[in-house]
Length: 470
Image (cartoon, rainbow, N blue to C red):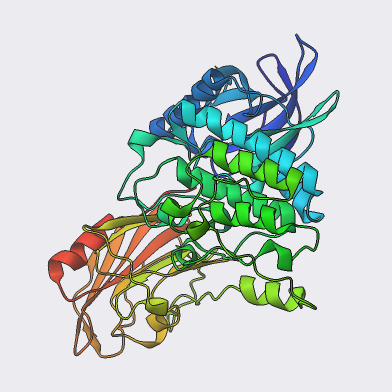
């Protein structure tokens, strides 16, 4: 769908951002002669009523927040082609992510930015909504006569506190998301507080805490990140203690609320001391002594190196896995001793792929150009005894008529229809396998492979697998 030159009274100037659901344009309000940002729903979702409803709900909610530190909504409407749009405050100063790319912020500037973002979060929490995706890319700046002002934007993941699911693995950005959010626990304001602490860590050091690249890796975090004093000489022990307490994996050990965190941060910066009475001695993290010559380049490469397994190869096929996306959830010994257990099946969603897995299956995730969730990232390819499920996209316009049986298995009669092709295998000494290909569109198939001996469980996992274009 061609992009119109204007939407209503707003003349589009240039595109300034795009995501899976919407595109943001710099525009000019011709009646008020002012620059604004127009966020318009992607044409891929114009007929999806649920997505339209959520898009408009975000706009209406932001309109009610009315905070200097949350991106404001000035208008909502519908374009001639039927797509809803909202008109936002234009952040002409870029994002915090842009600034961090150039290096850490000056100490006073970092404290100011975190304080302003914290004020925005407080306004959201007062309205009963968690942001759930606080990160540098969602902190925007608007030029003011006396400088600039930080604003919190993009409530695409925001949810009312009472509506946050206890069973669905939520979204979020790995380096900034709270561990309890990845574990699918019921959330409160402390999840956003953790994310704000992670943003503070990045603002002070120029890098995200922990260096994790996947949501699964977040589940293995069992301590605050390395001391900021080892990464930057002018960060005081007091600031380090305050920020690292916000990053405690156990939310009960974090600051109890945003006010206590922000007040402690400002006082630590001003006096060089942690406010007496705000940090119980037994809970105060011990600052790590400053390192001498730390090889940061080596340390960062090691911390951020993704370990992503290649999806299973199909012999005798010329099909190409398109923009390889896969989800594998496997059972067995927990990766690193960690086992992810809930009282009922857990729904896992990533990049449009979705599947519900049995509670006894443990998980690990790695993400780059592909996404893999498993106890052993390489085990799915080499060890046919691993139970689990694989999801991936295949570039093909036709369904397969045959498939290569896994080692140790014999094929049963294929089950085919206009939209699916299902292959079942009887296996000796390995889990029974079912593999299904489903048409997503005219050029893409969703491939699902489930390995599980229990027929009921195997079918439930297969039926729950799905893909929606993000």
